[in-house]
Length: 203
Image (cartoon, rainbow, N blue to C red; front, side, top):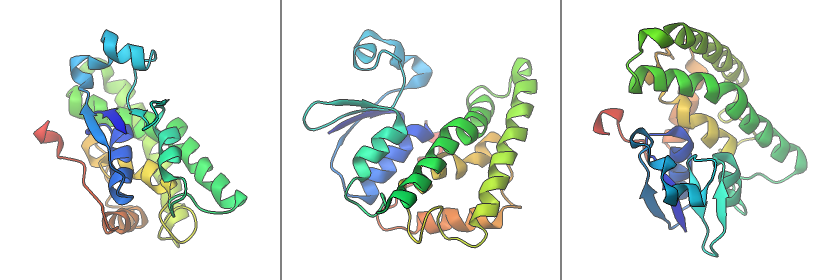
C-alpha cells in the first residue's frame, strides 16, 4: 500500500495515525502542497482533482478522499463499530468534520500558520474563527459525558475530528475552556500505537 500525503495536513495525518494504530504496513510518499506538488502531471494522473491524500491499495486501486480511505483502512477493526446505528453515527461525525469543522478550523490554521495572517484575509479569518468555535462548542457538549464520539471506544469518527482539533491552537483557537475536548484529545493520545503529528516548525 502507498499513501501520498503531507504529514502536516490533518486530512493526511489522519491516515498516518490510523495506519499506526492498526499496524498497517504502507509506504508514505511525501507530497508538499506548499510547493505545488499536487498540481504536477504525475500527481494529477493519480487524482485529477489535485488533492491529497491518495491511497494506492495492494491491488493497485486508487482511493481518494480522506474519510473514505479511513473507512477502507478500518474495515474489520474496532475503529469501525458493529451495527447500523453506530456506523451511521460515525458517518454523521465524519460528514460534520468535512462540511462544518474542517472548513473553519483547518482553514483558519492555514491562514495563520502558513500564510502569516495576511491583511487581505483577516476578515475571512475572523469568520472562520467564529464558525470554528461553533463547531468546537458542539463537540464539547457531546463529549461532556463521553470518552469518545460514538460508543465506548475510539472510531474513525474520532480520528477524523482529532486531526485538526488537536492542532487548533495553531489556527488561533483557545481550547482552555473546552475541558471535555481536551480530555478526549488525551484519550486518543494514550491509545496504543499513537503517533503525533510533527511540529509545524519542523516543516
